[in-house]
Length: 275
Image 1 (cartoon, helix red, strand yellow):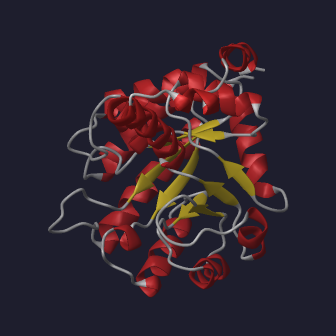
Image 2: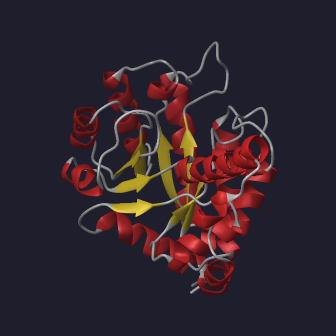
């Protein structure tokens, strides 16, 4: 499909009934596997990318060029629509957010997200007015480029468990032109339901963080449209890697091989991943 066709297909997923899962690969190989398994869209993960290149998942350690290069690798490995984690837009100003969106569209992405976290532990969330202006600029660029914009309110990831302010931000992001709304770290199904009921745009939630997890059916019933998993698939893979390496080092045994993906199956995924 062309990028325009992927954009239309991605938008259609948000307009149909029910919820869908958008898993997060971190490189071309994992994108091919998820495509072969039958998912309908993919999203990048800054955490998974950071782990793969030996860095921390933070704005100080990741560059816009690196994030977009990783996104392009994933886009080129699949025929599915791909949305990218674009962090805070890689700049404080609305103009920087708009530029990041334009550059993202040039990689072939169908969507992307901008968050209101600053990366500054002393002042972790952008002031309300600036946060809205950043989303408005990103939304204008996204609509000009035909890229589905997700706006993220990050209060709950940064020690600010204020549901009223989170809803205020999300509602204002929607009014500013965001297509999808996302507040990672909501603590309960009741909180998720409250957010979904309070806003007029599709809501993304993330599973795979610490705390309770809910099924697709439970989240759909609460009003969720899209379910991502952040860096949890990458961490699951790293968990298996560490357990296997620890077994070799500490026990001198290799029983982990029994749970390893057979070579033939891995090759089949790589061959079949792009439909």
